[in-house]
Amino acid sequence: MNPKTGVLALWNDCAVGHEELYDKWYHGEHFFDRVSIEGFRVGRRHESLDGHPRFFTYYETESAAVLFSSAYQAQLDQPSLLTKEVMAGVFINVTRTVCACVQRSGRERGGFVVTMSTRERGKAEGLKTTALLFAELSGVVRTEVWVRVIDSGQSHTGARKEEQIRGQDQTVESCLVLHLTREDSARRVVDQLASETDADWDMGVYRLLSELRHEDCR
Image (cartoon, rainbow, N blue to C red; front, side, top):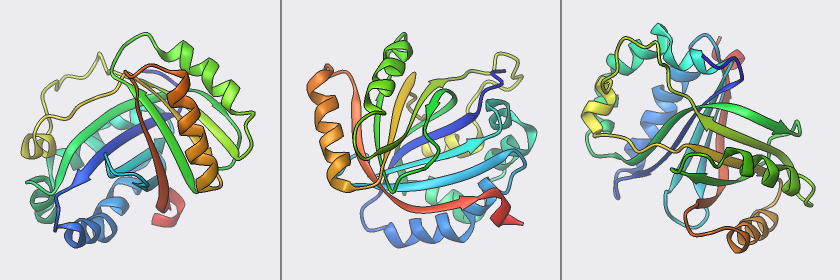
């Protein structure tokens, strides 16, 4: 397993008309259940400023190995009744990937994030260069580059119970995440990224909804 900081990255939508149930599930049990697992550091939930995918959530862990641990896998295989309800048509259009953070600059986390991800392999080195360039821009307080991790030693290779209920997830191969302090800066950055890259990248601008840290779960 990669010893670098682990990240579980998720982009998803919520079925129209089920937002209240979705929030009840997230803040009533799901966020706490995940972040309280030993090895999880923080979870941050965001909502899109311009539509699709509507939500971006990520969990930072001590290493990617935490996301293949028995404690985490047990949660995936033993969903609560409310989780089963949400997985069955409320939590939709899911892209979910276990990653390692292979490059980071800055200490602060911003109230806005820009994500730029790809399903194509071999793009991580280019993202590292882009991250260093954009780290110098006004309003950018943190940059991270995430790369997909696969646990080659995992005995169970099929979909876990939660994914069996909601259907197969999509994945990304690498992702650039930029943290910013203001919305106008975030919009300028995503416009600049779009003008300097090809159409194979998925980009989004997201504002922070909530954050939960492991120490707050005790």
